[in-house]
Amino acid sequence: MLKEYDGRVRLVFKDFPLPSHDLAMAAHEAARCAGAQQRYWPYHDRLFKEQPRFQRDDLIDYAIDLGLDRARFTRCLDSHDEEPIVRASLAEGRALGVKSTPTFMVNGTPLVGAQPVEAFRQAIDEALQRAQKAPR
Amino acid sequence: MRVYTILLVSIVGFAIASAAPVRVTVEPTMVKGPATAPVTIVEFSDYQ
Image (cartoon, rainbow over all chains, first blue to last red; front, side):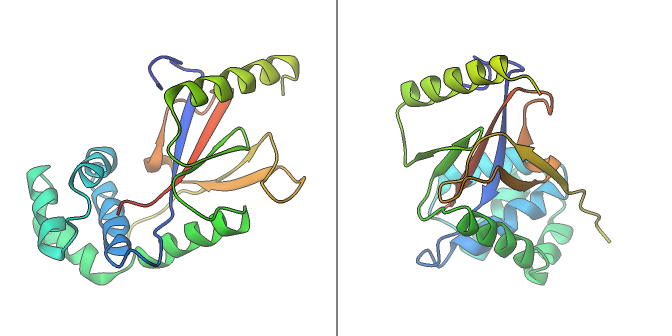
């Protein structure tokens, strides 16, 4: 999708770990720990592939598979230094009215739930048209 | 030890519940695509 709109669309990922998913917080922290070693997106993709296998040992295994420094990753994960910023992201989403995942905002216009590609295309095309009419 | 660079960006559009422009903090490591892109998709998601 991003390739299709090459250069015209950017994606900003925000952590929104639902409280009912008891392993989600650790997974979100782990992705950020991978990001600290420049492997945010590969780790992110791996988490979506493996869900919900997010026990501590699983999270460490994925890090090792991606070539991350195990000791550094484990230290980061166990420190929970990333937890406050994950919670801040969650709070930010709630303040914007996000109630379920995934929730997308295409230039601010919400698109809730797993939508077909066509719904994204339409929302992006409309946003592109509006952006052309009102350049900033 | 680690330093987060957090940019505050203004996204044209409207929040679900209000008429104010949506503002979210953006962390460069969690972004794909150029900052100059006319369209920004913000994804709030849960790994589990």
